[in-house]
Image (cartoon, rainbow, N blue to C red):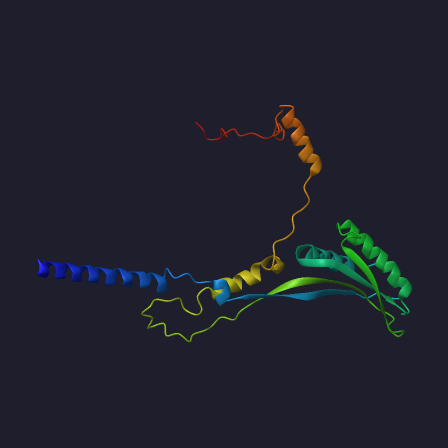
Length: 232
């Protein structure tokens, strides 16, 4: 009995060691939880985006090229702008009259692009008296994402008994994320929500209280029927 008990005890001890080894393999092997965002961080900084529009003293309106540049800059602001867009108007320059007319035209163009007084701020800067073509300056702040560099080959890939992740693991994916994200500001904090449509909400509640359907009406063109093409 003593011998049988000792053998059984040894067997349980071996089994426990095996289970412990498996548990360690899970902690140090492929099942190990790796925080890729901490290992390969993406740095998000703010950067000024600037558009300069030269204004000749005898200019009466913006050129087609200027309008195209303003449109592109406005689209970039809508996608990545943080805070208002600032339009700086030169003062003290020979083209101050033309610059004022151009500034009014730019405001009208931005308003047509759904950028009104809430989004655009006006300011003035002192230009040199010799600057006959002192520019209008449009600027805004945007976020820029900078990933950590890849290429850490310090680990011996031919010898990894603990089966741990390599130093480069996840680096390429993080670099791709930094390049492809539409607005790096989203990596810092979520965007704000648009205000609720109170009128629509009240309308739905009134229909609910009256026992009416609250779903949107479907037009005659909308149908859930299966196409009859090639049914025969």
